[in-house]
Image (cartoon, rainbow, N blue to C red; front, side, top):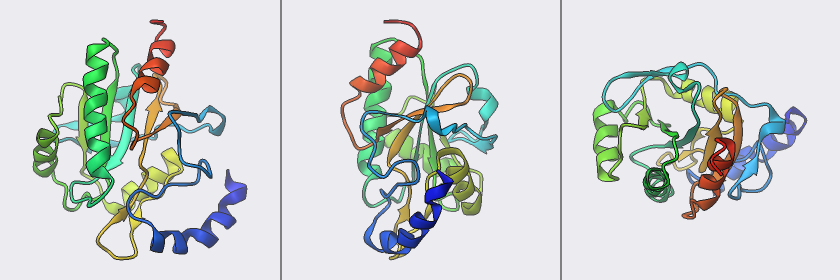
Length: 205
């Protein structure tokens, strides 16, 4: 992973100029298909203690012992989040229909604007069921930039036009031991591969 850092940095400025909030690299040179095994990279969900849409504290320890599907969004996103969040909402419905247990977690990359109240309104708009879906805020932009890099080897950064934020469009699967083991294209509406992986991992096939 780290051996490609120099190449990645050389293209970073150009990519920011050409990209909106959907740009992602660092783990793979191609976009995620549903899905891509990440176990060889040894990624893990780093410690955190943040605030959800109900102003409740959520920590990484709350997710231990369960599978979680994690993505990054922001409520003022002018492009891909308007596709990603409906897909997460559909995924939540499909998990319930198939009786598959998993948490959903959406980290905002615009924490200064996305207060718990704003995230609650956003989640309501997409008919989120908050019993297993948390929208998290309560940190600085610098903190979420570091968290995205250290946990997912993913970039969070202002876009060139200052009206967008570059961030991953993937959904990451975190296992019960806090290991980031899989990623899926968050713009893909087909949830079947995610459901299949969770059934297999939970031994329900």
